[in-house]
Length: 101
Image 1 (cartoon, helix red, strand yellow):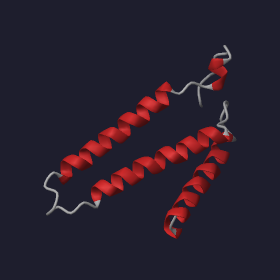
Image 2 (cartoon, rainbow, N blue to C red):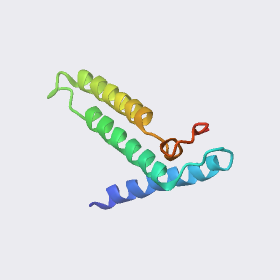
Image 3 (cartoon, one colour):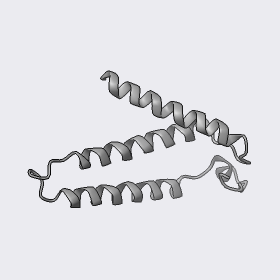
Image 4 (cartoon, rainbow, N blue to C red):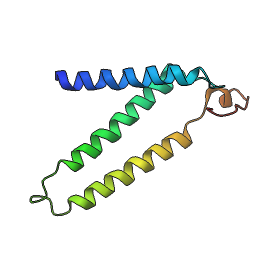
């Protein structure tokens, strides 16, 4: 793994953890470490896919705009589907939670 990839991963994890620490101070239902990891991984996956689509050369890929648009749609769709299908541990135990806020 290159130094840049490792540095990017560490920075994203650090930002997610630090911002969630501040947000957890006012949240009723706190986010745990697993949720923070999923947020960091999902953000990296979408950012990498989008950046790879954007750096395509216009002269070699005539359908560059279509690829960028498709990438944005897929990232939004997968994030919405994954977030909405993820159940909270409280819901699995039979207790209904108030949500993430």
